[in-house]
Image 1 (spheres, each protein chain N blue to C red):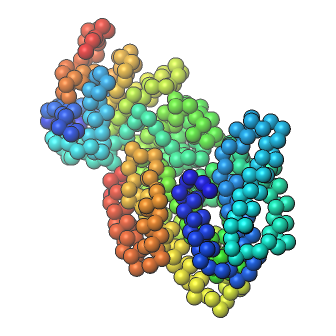
Image 2 (image 1 turned 90 degrees about the horizontal axis):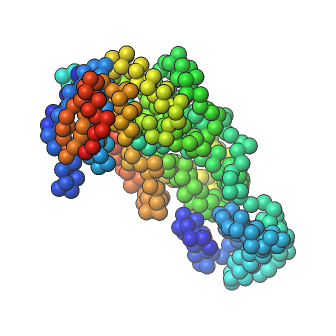
Image 3 (image 1 turned 90 degrees about the vertical axis):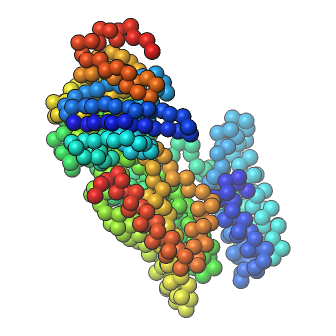
Length: 211
Length: 285
């Protein structure tokens, strides 16, 4: 279980997260919904320990470490002049069968240099690398941005698989329908706090949700 | 000559030295000035523009521009008197109109034989294939004479710095250092670097065996600088940054540390310590 207790983050006297609390069970998928600038990415960066914060982030009764997290950022970058195949070859040794399964699923032009991929293709490639790292916590910041229709369905499938592997998945998205499809809970982030958590049975109330 | 300080500063150093020092033979001057004109030509990015503006005569414009730069450099040097060798290079300049850097690089050479652990080299060579080949030939030829060895060494240091300018993604960093230790990375890169310079070392030993003390200094200096830029990459690594912002300040700092040797050793020790800490943050213990 992941427990976030009294998380506070400030940038130059501006409080971005204030007494932020959230508990996520293993195998649970939580969607984070909030306006631009609500603090979604700051929350992810805090979990990834790349911003200073006060409060506690606990995984299985121990402080959460960066090495326990896979974090797919909104924008992905790759080393220049390497092909998709070369990038993935670094991850191949972790699980060859999973590697084959994922490259078949995404069907990317792996012999092409990554900088010539579209943003959606780059996102898919980053996602494959991230999945092959096989971490207990998976953060997906706007994973559906720039991804084509087919890619969105593959993502649904992948998030479902992570759940079946008992992993924690935290997703943010501007497209509320994608969260309906994937998440067990949707947390509304407003004024630096989790204002309300909607269970799957309550998603109907979010259909016409306005901040 | 070029607004990019990485190129213009070493060139200004060469020109400054040429004002103060008279070279042993007149043949060196046209060769050096031809080299400077070639650097200008390699770095020019206005060829598509010239093609559009001077539809039929763009090759001639390229030649005239290069010839003017070469002539100005030749005539501007008080120690040089025009000779046949210098004049003949005006004909070689015609080649510039037909051989020039393409806007989209040609990847006929993919450098796949370079191991994955040296991905920075592979990427750099793919991006700068022809420039690297020409540069490498110049490095080997620099073994001909001591002053040339040092001059070319200073020039190429800055280009070696660009090899480690880019950051890999946090996932790639993590998986790389799960496979290889930081020491292994340093070793493999230093071995490769010295393997590349081996023909220069040997050539210098054969041609200038009496001056072998300079070679030892050259090897120490080059290796220290190389290790400094490599360790700096991981010292300042941050997953949010695509590059590690190598700039002229860093070049000068590491350049002076390396030529004075002892400070470089201290900076290197600090860089290694901080790099290991930084890598541990991403990879774990």
